[in-house]
Amino acid sequence: MIGISKLYCGAVEPGDILRYERESARLPSHLLQFSKDKKPVVVWNMTRRCNLRCIHCYAGSRNIDYPDELSTAEAKTMIADLAAFGAPVLLFSGGEPLMRADLPELAREATDRGMRAVISTNGTLITQEKAKIFREIGLSYVGVSLDGTEKTHDRFRGVPGAFAAAMKGIRICRDMGIKVGVRFTINRGNAADVPAIFDLLEAENIPRCCFYHLVYSGRGSKLVEEDLSHTETRALLDLIMDRTRDLFDRGIAKEVLTVDNHADGPYVYLRLLREDPKRAAEVLELLMMNEGNSSGHGIGCISWDGEVHPDQFWRGISFGTIREKPFSEIWTDMSNPLLAKLKNKQPHMQGRCATCRWLDVCGGNFRARAEAVTGEIWSPDPACFLTDAEITG
Image (cartoon, rainbow, N blue to C red):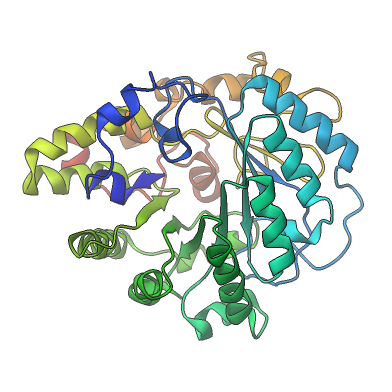
């Protein structure tokens, strides 16, 4: 993820990270991406079931019972292993995680063991009672998915009233004192709504927004043609930077990030190089700490059935199941050739990526997207929008 507010607006300085010696166990949540040990943030898709029918769902979720989900006991064993391994964050996702009755119990298990617990949800099932429990547990963050304004969102989610229910959930968390934010997946069907999302952040006093680039996975694999062109992506990134700066200039600082396209990092740097060279040098230092895409290294995924994946989008690849071996052992088993290569991707990159001057900054971007389009894991990510002149310098 690329922190637009952190980098472009100067909300974070290199010294803010170095004072913690870049150790994930010591870094505050908003600085974890700059850790040097890259202990994995783990996304657990704790259920595949969902009450909505989102057209871009990477898990292909439906509102049915899935018989192969991890039990509460299996999940507690998994959480104990993750905590002992030093994974700093467990992100409870789905499907829709609030459809599992044991979510509060398992989130408490994580926080009791010293992990930071985060929930990624469609927001429609959040109630006052559940939010109160989440506050008592010490939940770090609730990310609620919004796809745009009401008409756009309800169309993407496949259920009338989804937007109103999600906004109610956001307001409940906000008023309960739980950090809450918006998750927005960009595509041609909703890119025009991005300004409205910024208006919403301000009007509703929402402190955080993550803009996700489209990854071609699950039902989202059918939306390749709906992804923005490189020109459209650059224009939208400029808009996000401009709107974030406007908020900061007016004293309304928000945490704004872009996710799942690490070409954003060099793009932000190159813009700052024209506007503020001193800050650009600091941003380059931060980007080198960030290291770009970290699938299979600084981020991992455990599916509802216990399968371990490089990230939540790359479900065609499994390194094993926690029903047979703990995550900590699977994640450090370098006898798996792909896992070993993902820990150090640079020597394996092909095409324009292999000679790109930003390779250490973007980490080769998304391998799942490259494989989805070309069939080759190590080919360039087709969503990289940097020009040949920009990557050669």
